Amino acid sequence: MPDYKPCPKCSSVGATKVGYTWWGGILGPSLLTHVKCDNCGNAFNGKTGQSNTIGIIMYSVVMLVVVVAVLVALRLFL
Image 1 (tube, one colour):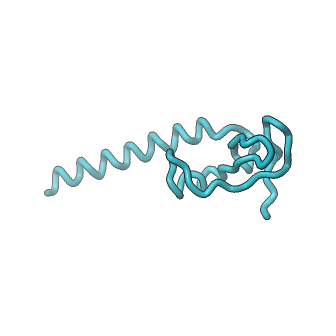
Image 2: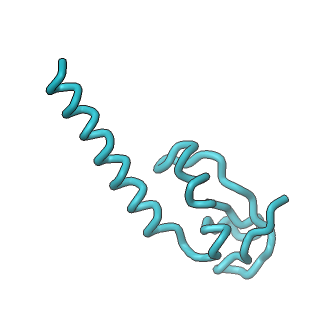
């Protein structure tokens, strides 16, 4: 089991890697080392011990730009 930082909410050292989220599917949580505290259920970055909110927002914006670019490219070339 990998060592993750303690939970910023309850200071528990037990955390489980999140495999899937609504905002990032399978790829997002892996890129952000998104873990969930086994004690209180708080989700956070396992490497830093901090919130992933900024990372989630940046990931979502980048994915939106990629999707729009693909749709525009399909519209132009088809």
